[in-house]
Image 1 (cartoon, rainbow, N blue to C red):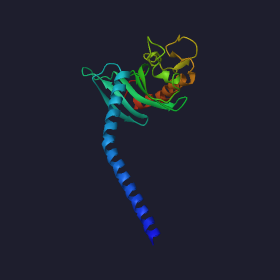
Image 2 (cartoon, rainbow, N blue to C red; image 1 turned 45 degrees about the vertical axis):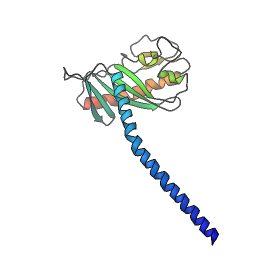
Image 3 (cartoon, helix red, strand yellow; image 1 turned 120 degrees about the horizontal axis):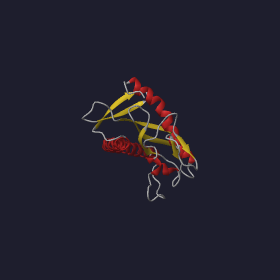
Image 4 (cartoon, rainbow, N blue to C red; image 1 turned 90 degrees about the vertical axis):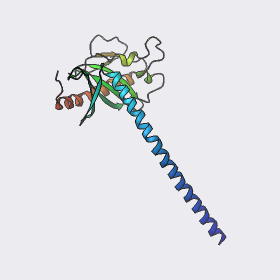
Length: 202
């Protein structure tokens, strides 16, 4: 009988601990979730600001290919640029990039890598290259102003000579090419979506 009572007590204690742990986690989630959502929104706004030309505001347009963030100025009813999120596989895992384009979808106005888990010191240079003291953001900076037709090309051990070319990162060719490939793949659908919404055709 005492053994039965001991087992019952243990079950009750474990059940109580489980219930309390669940309640604590649920309460903590309700506190942290709004903060996480707020910080993500602020990061999104900052990324849109980084990749688009100067604008006063942006409008969010839902499409079958994801959200478009259309930059607008108060003194004009014409968009200054269109931003969108592109995601795909890098060398180690998923890479997420905010991409800005001209309204006619012919050139990039900038990119910003928001998420990546590439090889530290090599693939991570798609975001920032600490070894380049004068210009640590040289790799993403190359994408500003380049043309997207027929597609963006990453060169290995060579300097760009065409408007659609960028230099790859030494020792991280796969990560470099992944960035271009992710953007190239997404642009196809984005162009279709933009035209369907009445965007400017090149």
